[in-house]
Length: 568
Image (cartoon, rainbow, N blue to C red; front, side):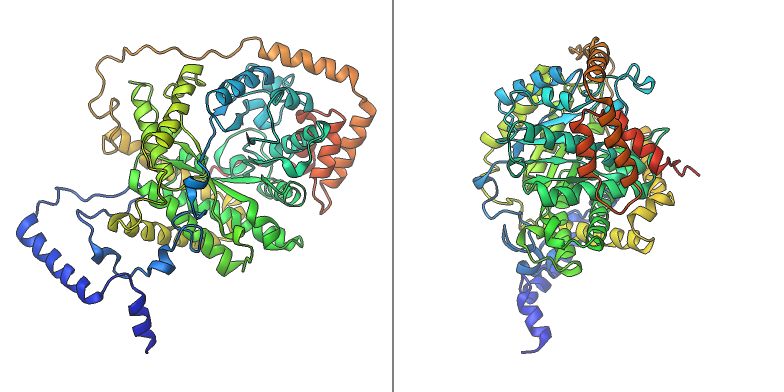
């Protein structure tokens, strides 16, 4: 049998039947549609042309076992686990964070009591940026839009009464420079409680793009330094926290800043490629760490494209692990991801419409095979969610789990001519964008040169123009715009005393700790910043002596220097 004949036999459809379908489709276009396909061309949000009708002709070259396969088996398009949600439902993981650690601890307990199955903490801006609550840079921001964390004592208060050895904990630290400190605090807290590190499960975000390409600050670590800390956290966890995901490559905030779904996935995978190459350079083997790498996707309103993106991301990741890195452990090939519905799609006008938006996006996440989900609350365009709105978000996830029956079968949209065609097209474009990044020297170089910044700003500008022109329709805003935005909703108010409380706690901490030991551990950390060593063990020594997050971050700023965003 010739190779051509073998390839022909592996295709999903009989090619003679395909030819007949193609002929009938042409006849249908001419005699039935008669040019009524629409007055304009239709595209997905990523610019993929969308046909009026899809038939087997649009997936005629599919090799089912190679291109789609079975769940829990290569190429993992249909899901990373064989029984998917029949085996374990996606984690209901609502983000919470405001005020003091004690305030957020109360919200954690409320969410868990009402059905959340994991915790996810968001930090205030001073903590994210590495300043203690008593730093002048923190004034007015302590405990706003997130919780304030200054020392290991705050981590202990945040998780007081939370069974961290039984449920997973997501720490939305964003920046690697913050991740390495809070990760060390979390591990040290567990050990103080007598909990072995191997029992801890959870995720750090830990993405250097958040520090160097997405967020903005006057004081930013250089890309190479931030990337080094990202890799330090991954390397440390792979050796000491076997159930911990030390990175969640953050496509989410890339998308919020301004990228297509294709760019979102491609940049995240390019980051994972760069990480893998660096850790291998350090002497690690791919299977030492790849099985704990995870990803974080943003799902917008383009329902089928977002589902196809999730499926395509698993396909491309499997190819990278198999073909590029020759990973042997099955778990190294699994693209596991958390989804948060798109905060940028929430509107302040007619805010109750946001319940529908988030529910649809959450449903797409489940149909796309997410392992973990946060559904945005309808009032997040105003402030942090109230208890009532957060409860609606939990109930939305529970309705998807318990009432829709979409979790009863694996990958229910597989076999759709449209979805399969879109999945293959998304995968093709993701591969091409990764190749473009590689041609430019890899992701770290793309950040240093400002190329990625320009990609983000160009797309964000074009998207805003489309909204202002009405090309991108947003119900209540530019499509059937509201004439009277009279909806009154209770808006969450941040605790006003948080800054005072945190400052008082810090004064007590300074008074009782051994300042000489703090200074000694910080000086050792300074020295190690200039050596080719993993910094996590030295950071852990600092936090155990009650060094603050701000003090450790100041070491990084002084030793690694600061970097200016390439704005030109």
